[in-house]
Image (cartoon, rainbow, N blue to C red):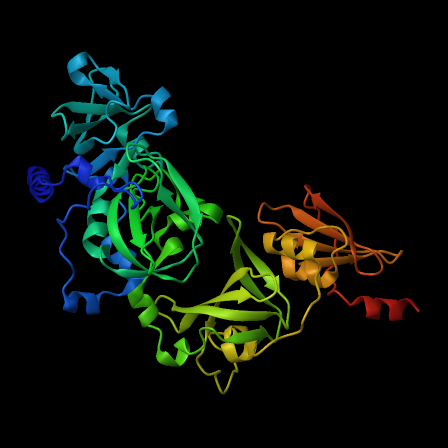
Length: 462
């Protein structure tokens, strides 16, 4: 059976050479990507469901599950120039420079144990016809194979081949504002550029990216401009765990950078009509905010005005994800809601009435807030600066998790940060920020009283 699988992998990819996987954006590209791909038939395209596109087509293989014949490309990073990865058995196990193997295709040939008891992971190099092995640092193969580390330098080409077959020529939509263009034809140099989210693009090429993010997807916008993103799809041998794809790394997941047109078209016309509409929150609610390479959940106050940028369906549910641009700060937010009618008996949708669009949002503008130029810049970055008003702090950070009052009229707002620490924003008696502090002890010394307006506090004092 192993021999059969090895033969099958060899037959399928025998015509695919190393250079076919190295693709560049227009400014440095010399040739078109290999034309060895066949487009999906119309029937297959209709049957393909965008929301489970990844799970249906890209399987994660732990090292323990690797099959002989699986193909990888050597994509060394700076660290790999110092700590070499492969040994040459014909040279008495001498270590081989990662640079000499750069961009060469390695075929997995199983694992063995050396005469001195060291576990070895074996490979055959398609480009030079030589055999190599990676020596497991400590313990047995079984001990090592369940770790996240995998084999250094190797980018899994199985994902690249499937993505090339399924995606070239497809229309997708951008899902972040940060992409890249190539700056070197013979190197990995690139420049990060800013792109408008939710814009249609066409996939022009798919190649190898990096070891951590193996699939390089090049797209072209309506103006003919090309840019790319390196993404981890199955995460096979990527060296990263699922929980590490957060903040700036979110864009290196397929769903963090792209959405298939099928997913957009799956939204009914009744919901599509909301795109571009202005709405405001009727109640305080939590939303996900992304910006400056960060992702966090914030409390958004009532009467905050948004423009609906996009409506995208959620996996196998009545929910959709709204992409919302806050009209004053221009920050992007994401909120899962349902448009289904509220249950006549319980008044709830899946037990969460606040997720119902008609309950949470009203059409049109909310309350206007006056902000200074300096405050607007800080709000866009999610920062708090001196002399901000309470409204400006809410625009930057959302509603506080807790509040604390003091006898001299000063009051504090406390925010739970993602690192487990507390951010304390200190206000004077007029509701202006006089300082901030990070409580590294995370001491629970605050009250759970809801905040009151300055006017109400003044009245109480009298």
